[in-house]
Length: 105
Image 1 (cartoon, rainbow, N blue to C red):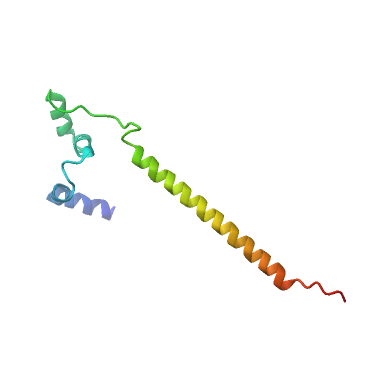
Image 2: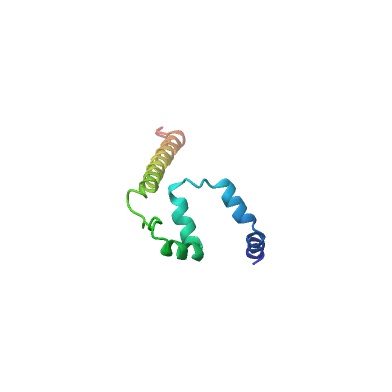
């Protein structure tokens, strides 16, 4: 609750809007649709403006970067799983060789 009230104070003071306008590039593809979906006044203005670019829902072309990141993450997880399995098998084999004696009494 404390964090929410602090964020609300920053929003009311206009700091968040200032930071967004300074640090997020306005020529990014997602900027216009993000700005249009976050504020209702901008959405209403876009509906009234006939020359405005219509909202485009997410498509596979626009989400291809996310799928590449997901695939890289899966590949990395598989490599780590195989490495852990090999290291564990090596330690089990080494423990067996060190602790087992083949001498006959």
